[in-house]
Length: 88
Image (cartoon, one colour):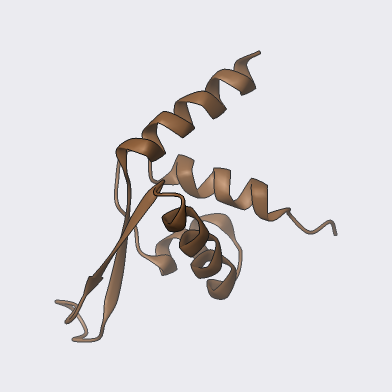
């Protein structure tokens, strides 16, 4: 089985976040990849200001720390460029 490139995982993460915020676990489930991979890729995307990672100190359901990831304006712009490249 071929391993997905981190570039492809980052693009998939951006696409998932297009119209909603998700947690690391939700992204992990949707991409069928491991938690650490999602977390590391999200941290890189955050450095480039494509996403924002918000910490929720006490999750309403289980009381643990949780994270919600959203696209930034830069994230929407880069996602639009990616989609245009895919269309060509």
